[in-house]
Image (cartoon, rainbow, N blue to C red; front, top):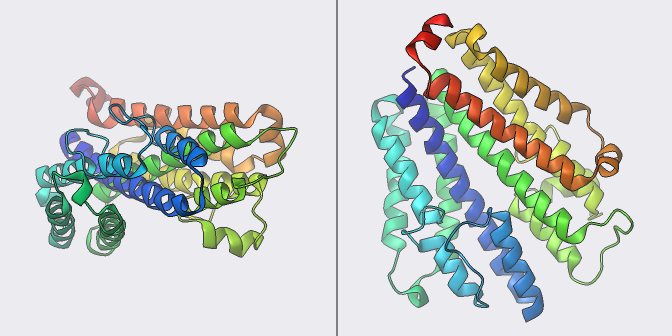
Length: 320
């Protein structure tokens, strides 16, 4: 596959996954605002910004609606939801011949809905309706992709983008929550912390799935175990890395295994780390340290994907 095609497919789905994640995070926290004091609101929205990686030009000034509108609609900032959808469509346009007509129609429909919903007046914008449209639209695109596109090399690069973005987003959120609420000496929840942990689960579309495993016992250790190590939940880090490894193995088989061997070792090592990890060992090592290392390995996978499949020399390609 041409490197430009792989690059566009990879980033098309990363931008869509990022838009959906951001939309869910904003939507959940707008809802939680109904139950909180102004002091809690300050902590919450600063946490939201940290959970999004502290994007530039987004700053908490005490107005939740203004910040939500900025993150949602601001086309001048590449981290906003609207900008992510625009970037996803542009990447899809560049590889229009590689995706199905149904994929293009769904993404184009989402793009027009997003741009039509935008208003220059922040007070006139309706983020709740916009956020739900983004979440539903990206889910539809994922379904259309899996049911209409050949599950070949192009589809594998789409899977790589989707699940690497998902794993990274979940890891950052977990890091923010554990840093703020978690101390190894006291894991009891006080005050509104219970709602905050439920908010984390809902931000990862994992609340109902968590309850099916642990009933109503909202416990930080179990939440960490579920969002990090569960192999069945689609938003758990382990499940995402399993999907990344499956995609890489399929691509390696088509593109030449020798050239991709270093990437295979990195991804395989990360997959094994998550497969055999246990929460008590993670706590003993330090939750923040552990999550930071897993995130670093995800970034290393991304870097190697680019070195091997996107920015490679002709000599390297021939050697593979």
